[in-house]
Image (cartoon, rainbow, N blue to C red; front, top):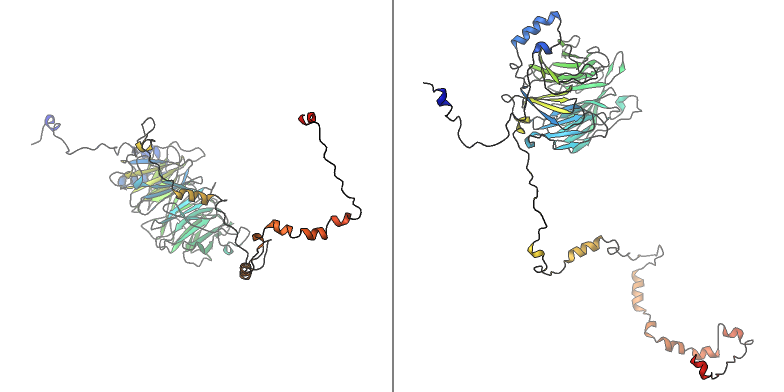
Length: 535
């Protein structure tokens, strides 16, 4: 028998003391799911039925896309160009179109979402790529400088790669890059081996323990010669490396030989376009490439033709991210011209057919330049051109990560409100005891004084040098035996001893004038008048 409405409103729904805190809904922003008919570009007639059927069969909710809410991390002053999440999801690093890299730690953050540290690898150099190793102990930073830097998860520099000689024509004969880096990736089989790509047309493999170069791959094309390598990524087993250069894609064995690629295609994308590459998590051979406003699905066993293509997806710097199960692909969209979008938008594609399911607006201005989807947290981090980082999540599907700081209050610092000086009783002259001054402080002060703490010069041993007479053991012994007794003699008696000798045999000036010098005549004393004396 059900209760009436009048009675049910008086029955309590929960029990116990209620804690006052910040609601999870207060700092979370609802991300609306817009109508796909208004957001999608006008498709061709051949794909109208397939796209319409695909939207009916699978929606964003069916694909478990965590986009119902999002939080903003605002610390960068320039566009966020690189993002990296560690394996546990506790640490996030972000780089910008500037020299600063921010370090975020979600378990220690409160609802203000502030980073715990900032590092600057190179002054005035843009951050191109960031990547954690599989254990999360170190991460590699690739900037527009030719040298990559290795950091610990706390932001302390652990190593630095060498730069090459720019005057060497053969890039195989120099031990480092000679132009700015573009991409970096870790070997999934080892936490101490990684690969870097640069604009000098090379891929270089490095050993983290010694920070030395192991192998070099020179990427070339038949028509354009040397080209800049814009992307590099290991496959799931670490046996192959997929690289992109000047619109083309190459597949290399990770252990060599590197004379020529295993698979290669020149016209994968438009020439001179920046291409990014991402591997499908659930497959060993499938990967996608993003460039010239298109996303293409490839099979490394046959690069002659693409498996699927998705067009009309603007954004030159935007990256792609796969869902944890590999069924969905999220692509960040940019503006078609120099003017940024009024709303940051991402699109969800099917990873097998690249059919577009829906476009989601983040309700934030700018373009999406970088995007990362963490498999454990089930959260998506998007780097925007405005300098903000939008982390989308779903409370029913996501765990930890950005959700930890929503309910945490910031520490309250109580200011000192006391007025007037605080005098302790023992500071007054009546209660103060005269204690002897400690000699330790005086000794420390004397030690800091260069005059008082000057060490006397040591005696010169052996032969004298520098104007100092040498001292040896024999001289010291002779001085103790042959003592000088001149100080014990009376000087008056010593002079009077030679008085008679000087008178009988005068020397020096007196013998010179003996024959010509007259006898001295001295004036007699005359008594002066008494009146004159008084004056």
